[in-house]
Amino acid sequence: MYQVMPNGEQINPYHDSRRKRMLDLLVALPMRAATLPVQKISAVYLEHALGDGAPYFHQERSLLGLNKFTMTKLRTMRHHGPTDKEIAYSQHNPRIPGFGARLLRLLRIDELPQLTAVLKKDMTLVSVRPLDDQTLEHYQDAGNPDLMEQLRRQIKINRIRPGLT
Image 1 (cartoon, rainbow, N blue to C red):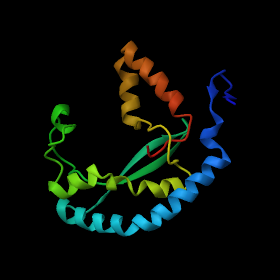
Image 2 (spheres, one colour):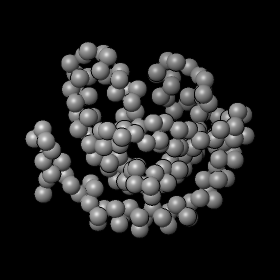
Image 3 (cartoon, rainbow, N blue to C red):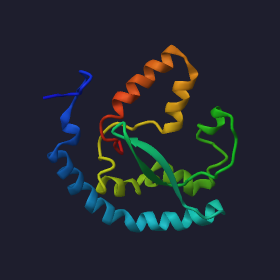
Image 4 (cartoon, one colour):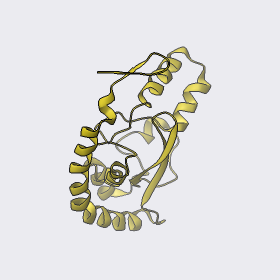
């Protein structure tokens, strides 16, 4: 049932099986087609609400621990804002431009562009959500044993295809 890696770790092969890929395509393709108008309307709204254009946010993520891919989302936050993490991660973050952007985040409409990554086989519909490379570097630089353990777990997680949920 499990695939054994060269270092002896066991990975569930279901994460990259043909059945899972077929399920991804059968769900993602019609979802992408059905939600494309909503995504485009949201992008136009965000272009005006943000005031600086660029309605899409791109971030590099690790794919299966080795390769990288660019994850794309609708950008529902302004570039510049508070650096205080308590404010930055709160529901009332001043970088979120109004009710419309909050609604897009609440309904997860900002995640719709990731369906393209599922179709390109960079992501899958259901799997783990890997950390971005900056966060992984932060774990390495901290030297904290607890953070290093979290980093080891995250490296194991990055060996399976990342997912939307």
